[in-house]
Amino acid sequence: MFALVDCDNFFVSCERIFRPDLQNKPVVVLSGNDGCIIARSNEAKALGIAMAVPYFKVKSMSERGKVTLFSSNIMLYGDISRRVMSILQDAAPAMEVYSIDEAFLDFRGMPADFDLEAHLKSLVETVQRGIGIPISIGVAPTKTLAKLAANRAKKSTFSSSKVYIINSNRDSIREILKPTPIADVWGIGRKSQVLLRKNNIETCYDFVNRSAGWVKQAMGITGERTWRELRGEKAIDFVGESDGRQQISNSRTFSSEIYDFDILASSIANFITSCVTKLRAQNSTVGLLTVFIQTNRFKSNVEYNESRVHRFNVESDAITEIIPIATKLLKSMYRVGIGYKKGGVVFSSLADKSARQAVLFDTIDRDKQDTLMNVLDNLNSKFGNHTIISARKGFDALPIKRENLSRCYTTSWSDIIEVKC
Ligand SMILES: [Mg+2]
Image 1 (spheres, rainbow, N blue to C red):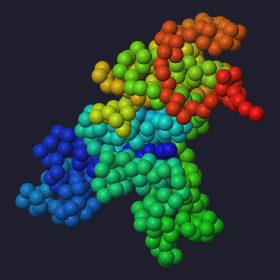
Image 2: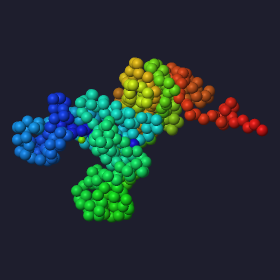
Image 3: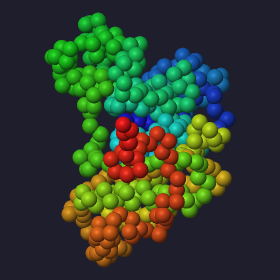
Image 4: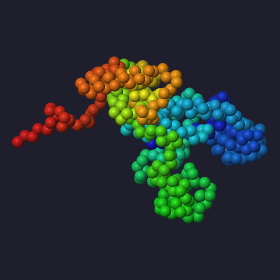
């Protein structure tokens, strides 16, 4: 899934950080040289002030105290943008900054039990609390649909949480396309709008019901791409896609809530161990490590969903290096008194180990580390997995939730089916 994070009325929101008295009041921001309006608060929109209206038309309104005007403070907006982006960067395995106030996040390959909705709701709060900027997040299987989802996330009629998810189900995508004007779609410019209207296409639904051939002929390859994206097929790449997209992950719902840091850390170490085994089996290294923990959203009165990301300067495949980093990430988000119900790790930005580049100021002796890891691998393969384990990993002390686990019909004598005759 892709998420599009969009800052609400960004320039106005930047101004309001330092002018909290302007919350819920009409505010507009003017272009350079105070030419015309380039940003409006919702209250200014409600007053009927349109985009790109020249300054002189609103000047008297501001003199009567009806609206507050600001000249562009590009330095401020740029700096606030950088701060928002740095929080977003840590929230997902990959990010593509799209504009000063928008970024795509790539959540493809996250484990099935990763609660993306809860994660993003908490991201909305983190950015609001940490920077003071309200954001909306749209999630969908394609970037074009994620843009539409973000439009809905802004509207309280669709979402009370500022997060709106369009899932991959074909019918639910169609339901959303039915009432959506084609003019609202990313990549459909004025020229295309005129052309589409001429052909009786008003909504996205009308559009996706045309044939691929018709769309390609009328609008070319870019039009066809938009058409496919609206149907839920990914046609627009995520920038930076080629640098090893596959991921390895491991996560679990715990059988009971875990309050203890050491138990939690040992469970995270378990996840890391299993990911490293897979990683080494395919001769890869990890460039980006994500660790996440979540509370039970159906039970707890505190909802706490956090994740942290570590980018390796030198890609690694060494358990001795990765577990301490994961433990540190865990420590930075763990809170005493909170019961955690779920946890997991994701390895992304995987690369071929033979392609690993030496870094001038690398503090780790890679050859020595490799030798140690090889010894561990050999012992474990000779005497069975878990013969030698990291001290942090513990001895599977952790009860893992397996309520729906079927019997080991084929691998355990006690689970074998008995036939009475
Ligand atoms: Mg925006």
